[in-house]
Length: 468
Image 1 (cartoon, rainbow, N blue to C red):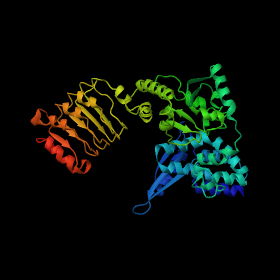
Image 2: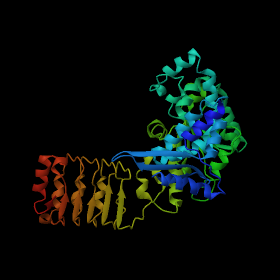
Image 3: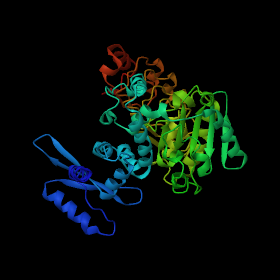
Image 4: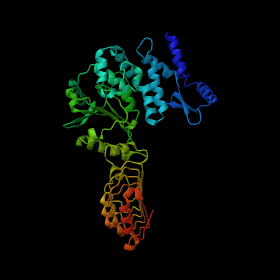
């Protein structure tokens, strides 16, 4: 019966009482896990409440045993979200929650928190549609024809779905929707001051809702918590997470214009302050650079100005600056250098992605330039203008050619090129050698990176410089 099933699942997922006003319950649970040999730590949501405990212990010499203990409040919320009388989908939700926490990555933990804080009403909706339609022949045919569900051999088996996004894909054809009126609805909210449309070009429209009502018009088309009617998530996101200038943050919705004709499902939602960029499926780690930013000059320019403004207001400068991270992700790597003081004596970027070094001639006082693991493929010729440069470190990048202007760096003492597949070495590099009036003492370079011929060429061009 249902009581036995709930008791079984409570034991299987190690459900524990988690009253925030009774710390002794948590202490008792942690002591119990510690006595069993586990090293444990609580998982805390955005309100400071404990939703789970993740524990690890060695099981043998090499294997690590990992378990998740689920808070009773989370367990209860998932019981309510299961639309079936016998709670046949409860274990699937618990498995999804536990798997995200066990993964251990920051994005996965954040997804687990969102699942219980925001996504359970959507889970209820999709599970209801799944239960109502999974026995239909059309359901099975549509699932088998979906590229997003290729790994699922039996679409009627809920345990084969690894995320809410996959479940959404399976039931999406059974959600009644009509996009023809959306464009008019968007404009109506703009007209009454509850939304903005700052960009509308040939391919895309950018919509910024300024009210809860405006944010939910995509409810039937997207798996976003903010698009769900009767919820407070819009205010939670916009007023609960301020911009660096203290103003309410914005939610940005990008729509492919073919969506309005029913010819495309391409819509995206962005909220920079919580590091979320979602497609209609609410999928993680979505990239819009090639599909949107590179295709729309209007949207590209809009986000460049928005992000640069917020990046400049960021209190910690370049450190932990999510707006700067998005600028780079959207193809504006040069923005890194725009935010730096032009009188800085040293520039260091370790592991930030900088595909191309922009014009850096304004940094006249620079004596150290260190850019490593940046996926850099190209040095700008302006490097030759940095006549005070003494150290240039470019290790573990993808540079294939050095600009001839590098020969103008008469004060350069140390050059490190290790980890770059350099194919072209300019003859002008010889002017860095002390025999030709330069100051170069050592070059870090490996023969296996640049080839035997180029290594020999470097030795000839830099006769008094130590190669290592």
